[in-house]
Length: 146
Image 1 (cartoon, rainbow, N blue to C red):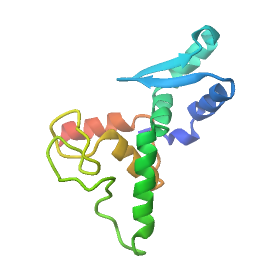
Image 2 (cartoon, helix red, strand yellow; image 1 turned 180 degrees about the vertical axis):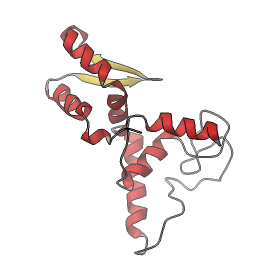
Image 3 (cartoon, rainbow, N blue to C red; image 1 turned 90 degrees about the horizontal axis):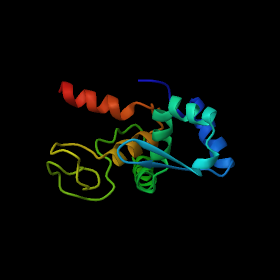
């Protein structure tokens, strides 16, 4: 995996775009939408393409669902006794079911055991772990190997 997205040139680019009044969104699956389109110069388009994976990750980090989960997971970690490793962080109390996130109960994209992307990302943020631009690609590759 690559370096932490918060230490990338994409982070600086995103802050610059927001300061200049651009609206940036992720359209599923991995489409970056920037508005107003008429202000996107060829140079900016090249920067957006070059930093697209990191920009997509940064925008996902700002997702309200990710932030709600991060706050809940951080509270659980803070409440844990010193030196105790948390085995499971949960956003909602849900049954552990195949095809459902074990931390929030949301449906997973495939019938499997595990966490949704929001809970995976929120857990890393709550633990102050680095977040790489290619984090989800790495998760998918790991699942294919197991």
